[in-house]
Image (cartoon, rainbow, N blue to C red; front, side, top):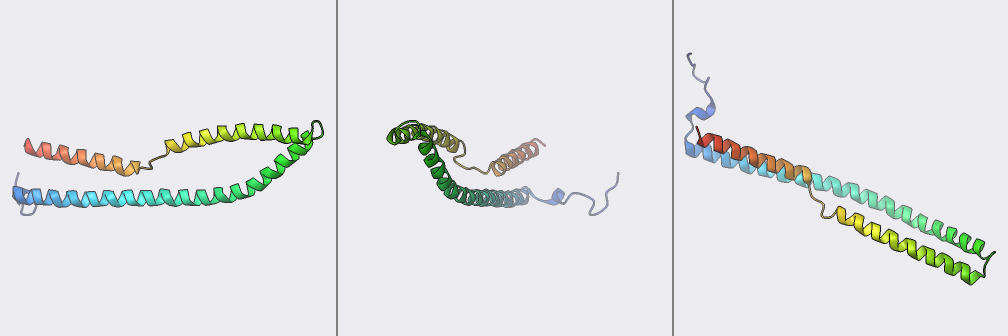
Length: 142
């Protein structure tokens, strides 16, 4: 088999120092790219969370007044059967119990999402490190 000039790999004529320099340069470029990916991913997640929180705040504002009217209706309906103070107390006790349950469930749910981490970027970075390690190991055994 004959080779023509320029048919070999570009790395055939590089010294070990040049190869190591190239590896360091490419590794640094790869790390910068992974950091940029992590920033983009976190920005996207933060934007979606911000929009969601804004919409939930608007719904909570309107829901608060709607719910207050519902509770007033329940108290007035119960006041037809029992004294008004007892009707208000019954509604208060039920609402306090529901509030406690919802608060506990909310805290539990928030703990699942904290801290927000860029899973895709971290997985990509681990994969890149493993690939570089394999390449270096294979290169040493040649």
